[in-house]
Image (cartoon, rainbow, N blue to C red):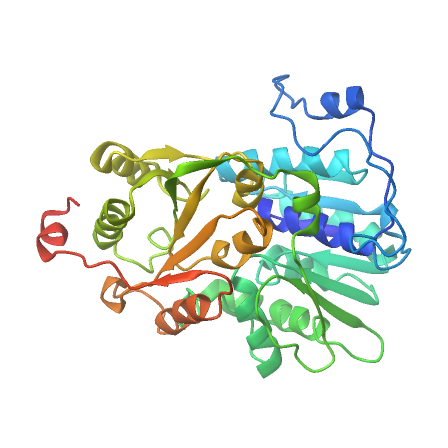
Length: 396
């Protein structure tokens, strides 16, 4: 069983299954097209190829590692509230079904009784499953489910740069806390502390349980943990290569929405970055606020694109700019892998410490610097100068 709460987590479950499972027959074209119909009956853009390719030759680097039982993988989507996230998850669920996986969409947050009903319905399958795959070890929902499972194999797939913090905390034996949260513990944290501690113990390998981390992030394996590299082989095999435009694209982040970066300084930096590098499109993070995106479109003149799939798939499908600019985020690690061999240059712009808000976690500056400093195959840009008048006036 796999538990996912975001499109990126589901993408990485597909990457993990591609690497570790035997190839499964693809659906016929008509069935695949039907699977891409959502509840509203509106057809979506084509995803991966609908017809199965020739079997891999012996020694093919894309041939799976071994013949495991992943043909019977059940992906449980713990649906969030955010509309953009839900939309991308539905598209990813279609792709997962096209690959032959079973997908169970669960309204895990559909009301006061939803958590109890969800946990109750999953308890039996959880106890029977011998391998559990999770996308977010910081999720309280996932931590609660981990206390039920008896699985002897646990796999953590990437949930972006949060994986780096998870590995560090696991190695140090610390409680699991997201990097952008401040140190204070509220009443809910204290009540949930025993569950979180139990989940952390289950994510620590022992004689009865193995733990694997499937990641594209530069991490060092904690004692007893297996780290498997994710090089986006499924994405590269299923999409592209993309058509390249002559322009530059800019990738947005949700650092403002998480309270890490001041909104006015962020907008001023976006304006300066777009002007310096000739960016014309802004690929929005799924959690960026509508008001901020409106200001980027109307005030800065950038075309705001709200992708229906994770950016790795959108970029691989194309068209995409010959240069892609980003602030410190997951994509500075994943896009060079997904776009390998295409000629696209990925560049990252550092976050100036002056951009951080007074509410930012004390760990924020070091964490963001680490995200940039450990990125491979990217060009590193200095922080964009933000004129003081822009911040004072609130207009980039």
